[in-house]
Length: 171
Image (cartoon, rainbow, N blue to C red):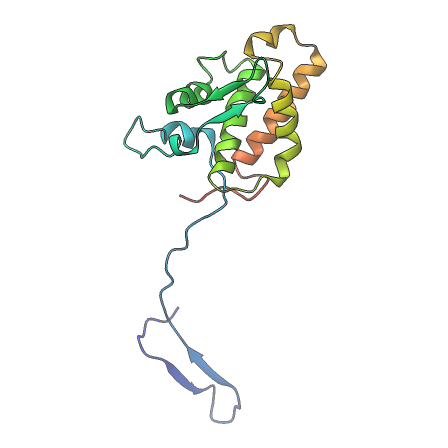
C-alpha cells in the first residue's frame, strides 16, 4: 500500500540479512466472465430503458423442448420481459410462472457464458415438464408435482443469484 512511485530496496536493520522491498502498481479492471445475473437484471437490460439490450442477441430460447406441445420459444426481448416479470403468463403465485422466469434467467446466463453444470439436471427436468405443462395447468397439479416445480424454480433462483454455480456478477 505504498504511495511512492519509485522502488525502495533496503535492509531491515544493520544486523539483519533480511531484505525488504515495496512495489506499487495499478491493476487493470478484469471483466467478470462466466458469472450469473438475476432475472431483474435481464428485465432491465432488454432495451426498454436506458440500459443496452443484452437480451435480444441471446435469443431465441426454449422454455420446454422444441417438440413439446406446450413449450414456448422466447423470440423477442418483449416476450422475455413478459416471462421474467411474471405478470403476463400467470402471476407470481403460480409456480409454473415462477419456473418460466427462473428458467429463462438461467438460460440467458448460460447463453452469456456462465457455466451451468450445477443446474443441468434441474434444467433438463424443468424443460421436459414444460414441454407438456404450461401456467394454466398449475391448479390441476398434485401437491407432489407442485413441490417438484417449486424445487426446480428454487434451484434456478439460487443459480441466478449466484448462491450456487459460478457466482453472481459484480456490477
